[in-house]
Image (cartoon, rainbow, N blue to C red; front, top):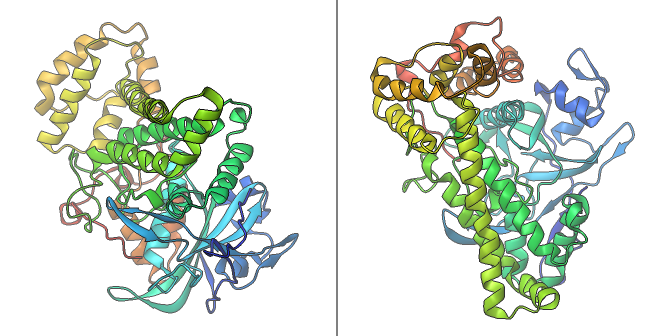
Length: 481
């Protein structure tokens, strides 16, 4: 469902272009699950049509029934809370639609929006995005997905000399708040309405007949975003760069850069070493996304006010209050979903007035005692007692469990369905990357297989479920890729 705006006389919104080829491409990773969802036949774990290697490398644009017309789009955004002006797809090039999904190549060369960049991605960041996209999907989190990583020995220079790679990303749409901000800031009201109408037609069709469709989709974007970030918090996932240009209009997890899953629980954990002020720390993610939604509403403001005046007769001040009330649904949805998820993580099937206090005390205990987040909840799910350092909390938890009506076996079974055994810890990804840099891609494939079934115990080393060794703990990741 690609949305392809024509070039404007005043501002280039879309650039039609060809990806820049890479020499001698080779497969680094491939997701048969994504291929199946796109209706692409596979054989022996790879596309049946070998021409897909060249297509996903950016070396050609035709394969089988598909003749792609690649393009890149302009958008703007707030980065670390500061207006950054025009940005855009600086190293992402849309190929086109495959079975109703947008297929995009990240790292396929320069576009009109690359600014000072080279339009390339490196092997390490491409592997991380590929694995985490699929890991998050398997965890049940709304996310863009990754079809493949294609590598090349072509040098790319970042902090050091690295090699190039292209990550093939898939989503119903890659439209983001930054697109709307771009049109709003540049007073491009026709383009803004076209984009909103496209969203309604293809992604929010239930609201096509609403008396206020634009306000309705603002509310739905807020609700989806609230549920998504509540899931992040429940899984101990940190995005790292929640700029408005990285925030989806569909409530999807987008743009995996300096992300990280918590090992030792730290409520104010910062996974991006460029985030000096901790703006995107774990405990601030929900607040930041709410702020991003206000940026979206601000960019839509004139259009929303026209709609509210026409449909409901609201004046300027009344329309502002109506928009604020709509955005307030985010906080309520986030709180309700967060509480629901954490109750499930603890095997609590009914609500109790003291549950929130119990949950907050637990998180404080995990933080104070520096306990492994994923392991704690998984061990609890497998019938193990809480650590002695949480003895006081555990006594309250056992008292709370006495109010439950389900059997112990039922409770533990339900807990194992929401508390994963395997997540993409940084040290696991780094091991796969280091082997891949030596042309050994077996660990990428192994990790993908494990992460595709995160809730099931698998016949692999227990090391895949454990935290990092001491020398690899507290790793921060940069934006550089």
